[in-house]
Image (cartoon, rainbow, N blue to C red; front, side):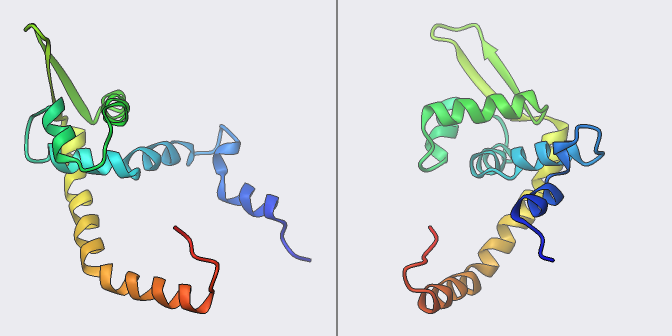
Amino acid sequence: MSVTHTEVTALLDPCGKAEHPDCGIRDVLDRVGDKWSVLVIVQLASGVHRFRELQRAIDGISQRMLTLTVRRLERDGLVTRTVYATVPAQVSYELTRTGESLTHLVKALADWSLEQRPAIAEARHHYDTAHPGHEIR
């Protein structure tokens, strides 16, 4: 008897049951694993940045997405936001100790992705060639 899609999904989603001990893991991985959070953490690893500095440094991020990302990181205790009483108000961001503890992991992931980029590109090309019309973007 084969396992249904619903059964497989239930096995992969222990947080469907709130009492499961792994429920917090998904929340953390969702935050530190999303594209923009990783890029913000990488930028803040070098020190304090103002909002516009972050926006200029992270290619392709919109003002709204950066705002949402730093708010989420702040809520999770990874980033500290400081507002200066100037006109207009200036805001800066920096990593907390918890955020700083992530930087070596993020750097390792970035290094791995750079190292593996040729192999991944080759695998994608092989897949796309073997499965025409099924390209995944």
